[in-house]
Image (cartoon, rainbow, N blue to C red; front, side, top):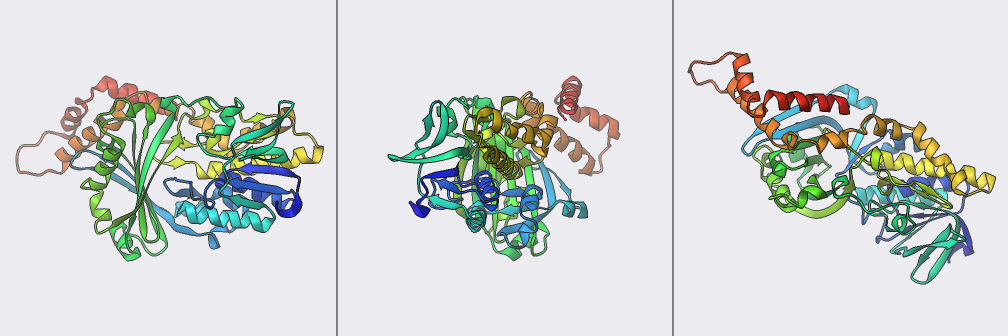
Length: 430
């Protein structure tokens, strides 16, 4: 064993952004830290749409974007409501986005950079090892076990992803409700940078992000996403596991619908698919968070359910970074006091509640319920908007109704009462 350490101050399971943020913070402050990652390298098993809101990492590593392998800075936001043969795309671009930049990233490259930063701070990062179980003494987590080997530590931070089998083994997590977890499928499409710039109206280093709903999921909960990288485009769909059980459109078919849609296909034409991946995403929100602390162990990142899908944006990486850092801050205080009990480690929950994580998750805690309350949101409203705009923009020389009549005709397809109910629910969820 490297360093000849018989007992570590902390062991981190999982080499994603939550785990590496925790390891970096602890090692930088003098703790002996080991990170155990089951992939061949950090980031090898991590899949995400590919967008990082930089504020939480900026706080931990000021100016990180100058050295980190970010792809493009997002300067264009697009929201697409798609029908079968068309749709409406709303675009927002403003210098205000520069006040808190976000970036498209390739997780394989980015997580390896984070692992290097953790190692430079003094952490030991070991890859290619799967942790089979947690090592317990008198009901307290005191390390990990893998393939017959036991590694002891004062505390373990679990950052092993949405399934977090280790958290389930010790009763911190239950099996996800199918409506509280989504399945995502993503393609990475190769295009040269100048073609991407031309298709999306960008300059070198600038990026665009798009969220889409409507036809692509066949009226089921979910939608598509698209992010521009340096010389690739990340394109995918997300839908709840619960909806896949009775959807007439399979996940691969949803992905094909999105990439072949007449408003999307021109953006990626001439591109070649160079990567395909699928993963699970927690979407239950604050109301279904698991237990975050037990004696000798803390739960962070996706495993803790710290993800927000708000329809117009998806956030996970900034919450992962912050939760990892706060878990590390808790361990540092516990180390100083020599107390790793549940009571001492509960400081983590206090720090989370004082952070933007719980503030934002509390603000939007009713949003997952609203998103699942009506399938009209994923089909009918795209058609309503399409119907209204077609009446406004199709000029054929025939007698035209007034705008109010045209609007009433379009809304009639879903019903004024349904529109009012969904509007009230939506405002209440925000």
